[in-house]
Image (cartoon, rainbow, N blue to C red; front, side, top):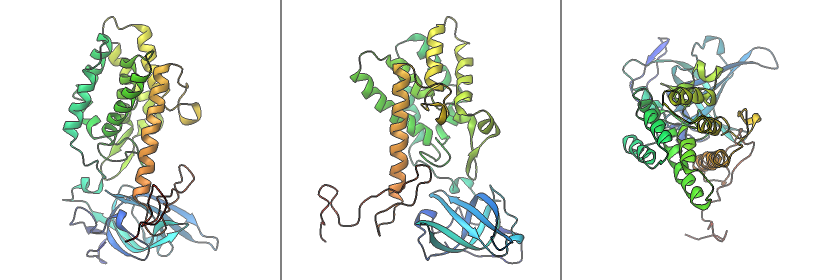
Length: 342
């Protein structure tokens, strides 16, 4: 990261869309002097007295932690700010972090904040057209009417195209939920073809709607965060409320079908300790849950592996799963484990 710094103003003008060296490119020993988003800022007590600050910074390519030991009383940045960060990258417990020397607010005026948000890089309009094509494959007239009503709703469609699937683990970028849902539809369709007892229309709907509540749960401008409704209610309930209201506007919608669809949404996390008030108790809900797990976990691990430095082949520690991941070392064949030579 490089750029001009100012010492005579509390706010620095941010004149670029982001740092020249991205978070993903930072390596231990590299100097840091660039504009990042402050995702978190937490004060802690030192054993000898006094305070130190813990940060999480981000740009469109990822996140990195930071620690600041000196001059913390003069820091006025808060979560959500753009900030000029100066320091050096170091390795702590096999995880990169910035040892921060100085951090000050950067003026966001004239800055395209989307430049600090990670994006899928996909054609979202084309992807959304694919989603509507999936709706068109549904045979049950009540379900097809429901899915069509929801995904052509001018309040839902623009938000569903853009919303991330999560804050930090899988598909945590603009357009992430749409990408996740399309991948799940492909996987779910494969499973449906293998099991004749499955109601495919319910599986398609469960996949389409399982995370619909995230359009109300997740906010994103300079960074991805949760709304008040997201923190207080959560996307499972928010999604069920939206779907239930839409169902109740369709005359003659079968009550049992309504219940089975809502069950598929509310159970898709799999168990109470994972956030679902009920475990999956239908074949369709079981498939939706497992397909969701497969795509989300595979994508999360894939992202971790892609960020793994080549030096030793091991990823940073993944706190969510409490483990490291191994991608192999340079010059090793994945098939044989033997050196490939140069």
